[in-house]
Length: 62
Image 1 (cartoon, rainbow, N blue to C red):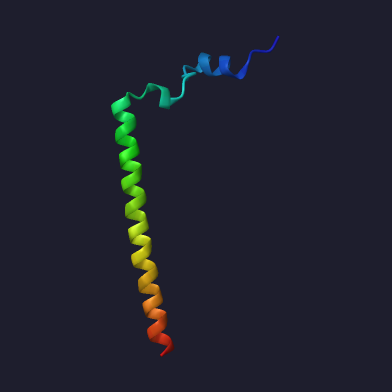
Image 2 (tube, one colour):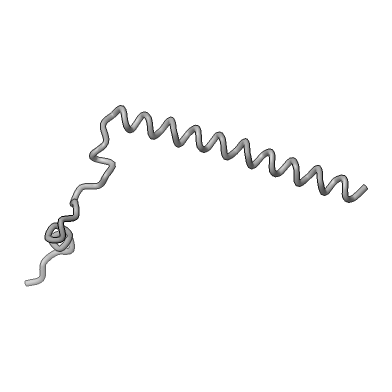
């Protein structure tokens, strides 16, 4: 009889639970706020880079 994959993980000492289940509600809220801040920051940086590129190309054309 073969053992299931999760049993092999258990033998190696690996956890059977996902990391998300270990988080407290405060940690979940913190992570959501952090991801939201990173998203907004990356959108702002992408906008700046795109507008710089468009300006550069527009000046090169004329």
